Length: 484
Ligand code: NAD
Image 1 (cartoon, protein in one colour):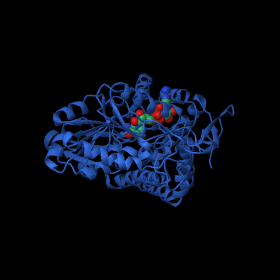
Image 2 (cartoon, rainbow, N blue to C red):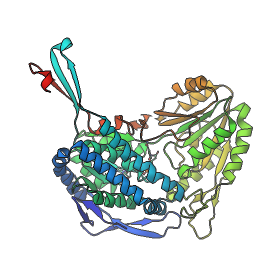
Image 3 (cartoon, rainbow, N blue to C red):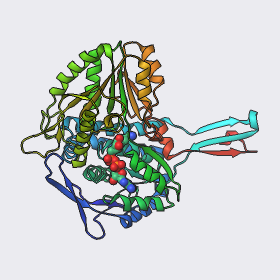
Image 4 (tube, protein in one colour):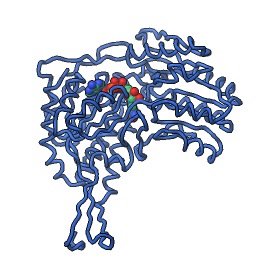
């Protein structure tokens, strides 16, 4: 297992030798220790990336496509080991970790595909302006990437795929909860032939490492995935050097089940989207709104399905519900349930911690809260746990108003058997993506980005490459366009 940091092609420890423990959230056992780095190590990593920029730009697109494909195939080869490591440090069931490795690979493959597809675009508009205009995507330079713990491989490749495709060297700061997956990924990149300095990984103290990113004029883009609260701090920190910011922040997805929805499909869809990673997902449904005519049947079926979830250690094959990432995560779930009950919600399933023999007290029972209202904390902030607050509605206009009533706008879901009706509702939801009878609408092939306080910028699809290499325009007069 790789536990050291990668700076300028060399595996290193923290300058003062200090380390951070990485614990298995299921039982608090120590998995490994990683360097506890800060500003100084991050400054060196940025300098290494800045030196590597010219070299990376000199690589042809064909070479960069091959590099992305080589990393992706090594990930496929090592899939089982990568997934086991993810489950150990993050807790999710192994089957989900295996899925995440494939999902993460799809962002490398997708970026390689987009790069192959993109060609330099020449626009000859002599008839209009008498000029020849050439527009070319041009890499910004060093990209600093800050990633969260809930999908540590996928949130990394979402950024590294397009950055590498467009020739931007990167410095990665993974979450303190899940640094080992980033280091395992880095090891595999080195093996695939990523040149020294093109990928640097620095683990440790967020504020010190972050300050190195925001002080350096060489960092031209900071791409962050994490909470809205941290995103806001990064916006403030960016005011001096003004790097481009790509922010994938928190969400609070509404899940609206219309009168004409297929009940079985809606319940199955909710199980998939809500219980992926035990609810610790940015696109997790947090406000479930069901037409009154379907409400009781929906709750009965959902309750049956949720009762069948098996909590346990992620490496156990029968586990379908892993632990919350840490004690703070468990406390937030408990607080949200207590607040909802105090405000009049009916607790009809769960509501308490589950004791799993031999494991930490970090498992929360799948929980259903009925009569949820917009004033409850669970209807306002991400719960990030296995809690389903449900509200019955009579008029879909009320559901849409509640759905749009928060400052978040990441994902939403609509269940209906009529396309026109579903689209009509979906068009009015202020979110970057809508799953219509689709519990997993985010893919590497399609653009994804939040509205309002859920973020800035796009990941996935062709637009993701533009974040790292926006178009540069060459306007020419008096030259022969045929010679371009
Ligand atoms: P977080 O904001 O606490 O941390 C995210 C990352 O930022 C970590 O690496 C952390 O160390 C780092 N960080 C924290 N403070 C920093 C600072 N001052 N300077 C530099 N770096 C700093 O988020 P988290 O708890 O790791 O992740 C969960 C959150 O991420 C949830 O809100 C979730 O919705 C969101 N998320 C969003 C998406 C998306 O695509 N929009 C995807 C996954 C997760």
